[in-house]
Amino acid sequence: MVLGICPQHSKRFLRALTKDKLLEAKHSGPRLCIDLSMTHYMSKKELSRLAGQIRRLYGSNKKADRPFWICLTGFTTDSPLYEECVRMNDGFSSYLLDITEEDCFSLFPLETLVYLTPDSEHALEDVDLNKVYILGGLVDESIQKKVTFQKAREYSVKTARLPIQEYMVRNQNGKNYHSEILAINQVFDILSTYLETHNWPEALKKGVSSGKGYILRNSVE
Image: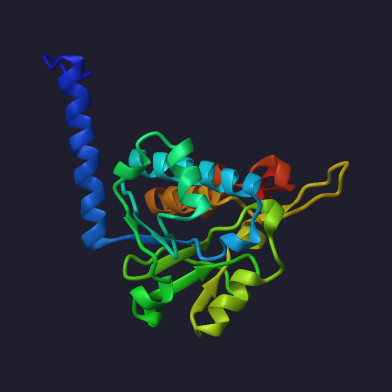
């Protein structure tokens, strides 16, 4: 608590500071789109999981020293996902982010877009403040092979994958399970940590849980 400031004023100050940081990101970047145009692939249970991931992503962004400006695209207020977001996320309608029915590909110049997909051949090397990064709003159970990759190709948009293969190795485990498919909040935590540290191993450690079957290379040397 700031010395000489009562808790109520301190909380009010922190809320104002968070709001200022978020609004600054809207004008100066970095920017992140969550592509929610694919919810027809998902069941009610999966929509609930996605709503929870959006809540966690937004919560992490509010705490970040350098937050992203978030844009939820292909998102209608009469959709089942919107209903789930309102039901599960207290104060969702007051979130400091953009919500639009428009597709992410029509909102920004195509040359500024980078669609993050595990199917890309190109590893993400850096976070460019002049780019708009897109995450596909799909949850683990509903992953359709290469859906996000094919969508990006359809619009001739650049793609990139997180550099998991470059900095991590498969860990031997009883299930022999290895997956580079992460929840959107996990991908966000990696991007946010990298933006703060410019250290991919540290960032990947933040978002790739041991259950995915990968560990950092230096962990086995």
